[in-house]
Image: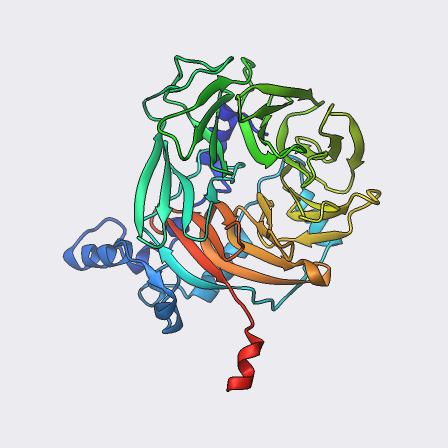
Length: 444
């Protein structure tokens, strides 16, 4: 992946991360600097923090609270403009154009999750434009996410916001474990997080790892995975190993993948690959690992020794996401060529499905716990929910405006949360799973 220095230049120059309100819609609420009370009143109306409920959305309110009737462009026309002008970041020139020529999108029309609530009290942020795993749901009511230097918790029942860890100052472990940096870290820049199985792990730009058990006070473990100059932590995967213990795997830009156990916070394995590793995911039985990174081809490896079992050939650019279906037979990879590919371990000669996006790279992937759905997040504006029961050929498209900091399904699949990063309309969107209660028909 792009290193920190290059990344900041890219953000400033031409980014994938353009704010929604940066488009020339300002005329709808501002006179371009001339001031005046009417202009100030309009701006206050547009930017005031307001939430949106499902009932309000049914009455015609925009789910993000965007007042289209006060802007000089319709939602439909602005969507058309975004599709035409959005610049997808590529490491391999024209990889997206090649996909556009070769692949067609799956049919829309699925309706699996319905809008429930959007809160603008939650303001997710993104530090590295290629890393979008910054939202994690631990229940259908509890969500963890990044805002600037803090990991925060949002309760959708009490509508309350709590700071969990603040990395703007000094963070040090409260427990003693072999290999832990007791002096901790100061002003850590967080690149990625993962929250699962009562564990929060935050990875940093300099290879830092900070671990906190959610039911304990303070931090349990701090370490720096590498002193390499190109050390950024790209992804964290928390999972149960073959014995049922909680482990986590860190993917780094130094081409390394490191496995830690959580009982003693000890390094169990360290595997090295030919290129920077952007994401790994461990199979449900703990035996296999998908490895993707700064190469068009991904890898399937043995979790015990890191031995490469197969290459995954088909993508045209670098990959930043992967996920396993609960059946342990299929898995998905997400790439900057604007596609997600689905693979079957019984025949890896080619992918069994190619799922093409609208705007840009596939930055985040999650299967539902029951295996029925695959959520695919683009860097901005679109989240797709594919129905695995019809071979991924039908999808629900969630259409919004803003950069997506992360998506997460709750462990029971009942809630879907989407973090939106934007200068004005930053928020957390919540969708609830739809159920067909056919047994009630007899009472109607």
